Length: 173
Image (cartoon, rainbow, N blue to C red; front, side, top):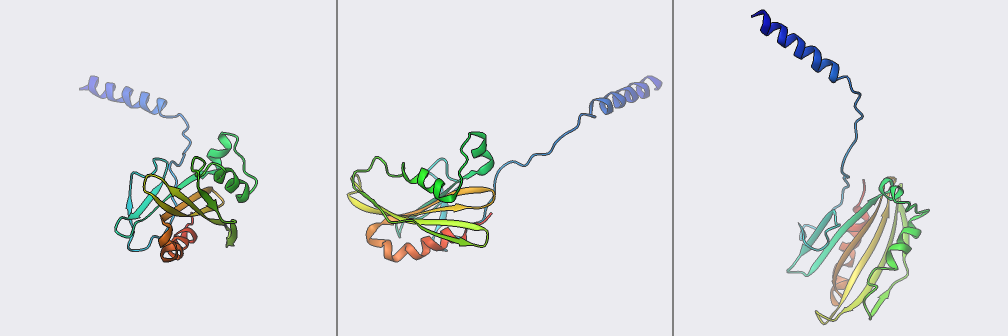
């Protein structure tokens, strides 16, 4: 019996000695809030980089949100001085391979501490043989930059643009 007690005492002493390594806590992942119209549902499959994807197949409306934390961007030496600089860097490659495309002038807005840029984009999808309308939104918070993209056919733009804007301006972290 004394051997068992001695064994447990040594094991306990050893574990307390090795457990004295100081630990530093890290948080993983990123959360943000966004509101979607009740006719839209979360989905998957549009963009593997998206944090959230949403759609309504019957109404033919779709969208997604992609984010980059400012901390992660600094790790790769991508330090944007402003939301406009982030927007310009994104938009130069957006729809780059499309022949027939157009972009509206970007509109800037600030709500509280959050900066927003929105722009319309239209391109002709050869495969579907229709024009596609995008509301492109860029959001800058203290922590991150977000790309909020919602789309439908161009002929439904007037029906859904206000809802796309509500999605964009609901984002916060």
